[in-house]
Length: 132
Image 1: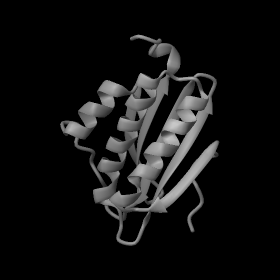
Image 2 (image 1 turned 120 degrees about the vertical axis):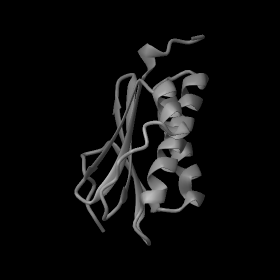
Image 3 (image 1 turned 30 degrees about the horizontal axis):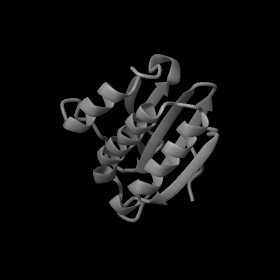
Image 4 (image 1 turned 90 degrees about the horizontal axis):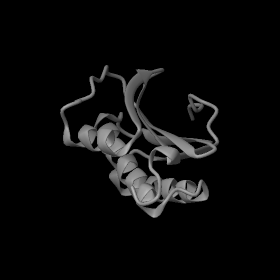
């Protein structure tokens, strides 16, 4: 089993299969709620993580895993969703999924390192005050 790329606060590893996206979305919501994000921001983050999964899953090597690393800091959360992939991937920055990520998150990025394709989503509660 490959080691996580980063020293995450929370690490969730599931099969690279769309049936497990709900596990990552639910974990995301629980962690964001613990950081006292508003319900609207929690839902935005859940949607963003779902879109990140939608971007990485088609690129996963057969039989691979999907990993979500959660980095929690005060009023912010960064989620790195990754899958193993042998081929170089160029993210589709014009895709609907990417547009959703850029709209809902403070920062979205994609990278490939160490044989894994990753999409990162970051959100800070201060950037999304209650009622905004």
